Length: 106
Image (cartoon, rainbow, N blue to C red; front, side, top):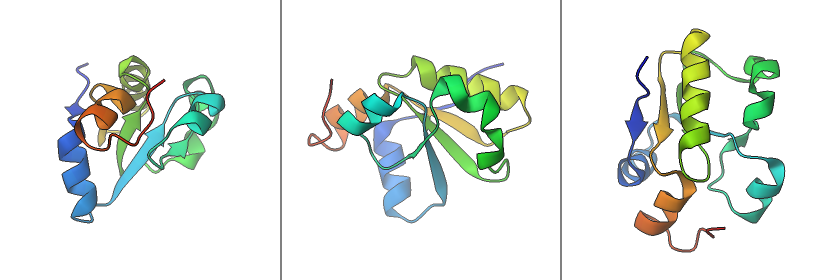
């Protein structure tokens, strides 16, 4: 199964135009406290127990630090019936580099 990805610039553009996207931050809580872009926090290790917090009808974008955990989250969601999911390519680091330099990299 391939993992669909979205570039930071495209995500910013879609958010700015009001597209209804659900940002799913799959990092750990301490990482979210360091830096975030306002997504709904469900650490990857808790995703299987918290699927009920997600709506399979919504378009979901997984966010992590640099991309790999987001890819795992997307794969897991796809395996569990979510079809409108993508990964933020390069994670928060890409967002910081290409969209908002104020988002802290760690």
